Length: 236
Image (cartoon, rainbow, N blue to C red; front, side, top):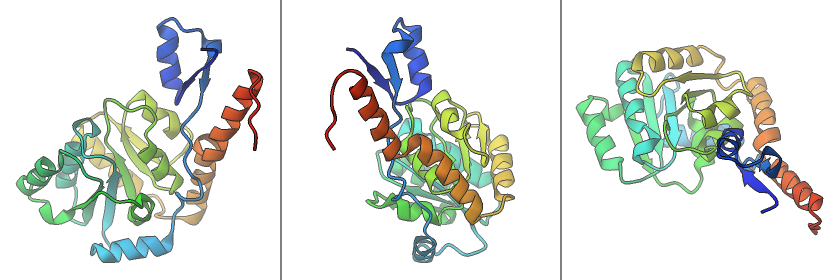
């Protein structure tokens, strides 16, 4: 092929290490709809009311399939070590759900953990979160759930892997930890909670930065320019 597209720089570096020339690679982050994934105070109120989340409670959220490599047990162990006003919401479904529910019961935090199941409008739930805990620790390219959380203006606690560090390096409100380091995760959550919560200016600044790099308009622009460089006209 004349061009190899990768969705992130860390993947491009890996391909180069395997013998592909750098000038054959174009980094093309998967585009997310920057207008869809915005904070909505109405959705925040609607979801928190529907699930009984009090105004004093801190809602730590995660969106994604409930699969092994997503690291959800780390979130539960951290929640068990945090004060009771911290609650957890998993938006998504998968084969790990029964074991995660059993683990929540064993840890004595069943009443603080919400499993919403599969949702067609994850953006509504992102607005309800106070923090995103992105616990994936093995096989991620550039996670769409992470980008969508950032577009929503959320502070993020994440596991330290190359593809995650790439978008986080663009923003201010994040902490990274090693997988299963519960004390560090507790400290990270406490530090992020001390930031102004859902501050409009902070959220707008983060949204603009992430949209510029990971928005759908940016993706289309790179695609059109790359095809044009190789003699393929893209008709509007």
